[in-house]
Length: 368
Image (cartoon, rainbow, N blue to C red; front, side, top):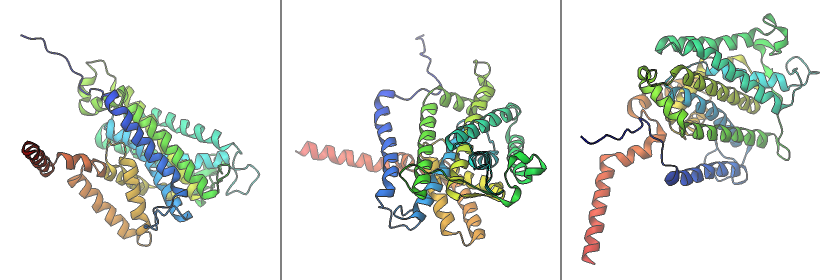
């Protein structure tokens, strides 16, 4: 009997055929987004019109939510781990950078530790990643409902500590439940709105590069194996706990980075902004955009911010539509909007149309 050739469960994609076009498209999208403030070609929609501060501010919110969804995508979409602490870690990024970078000699609502912004930002994000890993140790042994409740409790704990402020430690300087004014970082040569637009876009670019590189290598394939056949990974020498901890850490880092970018755009952070509804918003961004898809977080963030701005005066209607959208996405489009082109290519009528065009081209060629 002929020997069988062993093939990997999740084989790496061809690096030579697809790498160059894929990266060219990737870079092209970000170059286009970077030029938008100077090429206001989205004037047909008032919400994302980059020719004014309102549109650029909404686009910056899109980038911030997309950053959080990129990390959330790695944790939920790739490892299949339902960690729900993202809202609390988002708050940690917002408040952490605000407190550390605020001037020390200022009123209570603004006072901080006077750190440079680009020192405070990585410190807070790394601290969030460490918290994510530490929580991941017990959480990695939990599954389903128990895992969701445990990680959701962590997120609520972080927000509760922020609200208590001096009752926990007077050095927090979060100004309790009143809210914290956020000092804004200015990019040299740019105005206030352009600064946080470019800052958020740069953070999204770095997070997306890391996501693409990691998921196209062994980490992404192993996380898929851990998600799909967790019980079989141990006997073949794969530590599912280790890879889940990596996913927890990266997701927490991304959530804190997103919170910092959101705070720069909002100029003010209040604990009520980081309750369970933020988690629901991020779930909508991730599921509607597309789980395990590179562009899913960005597409989902565009959809959510557009809908939120359109319905900002009717919050109850917003939650109703988001709930209906989430149900329809799960039932009708489980892979999200990002999977629509692939789904259309694989549909029966597209394949039939392709066969008809091929037969027509063949008949025309033979007649010539």
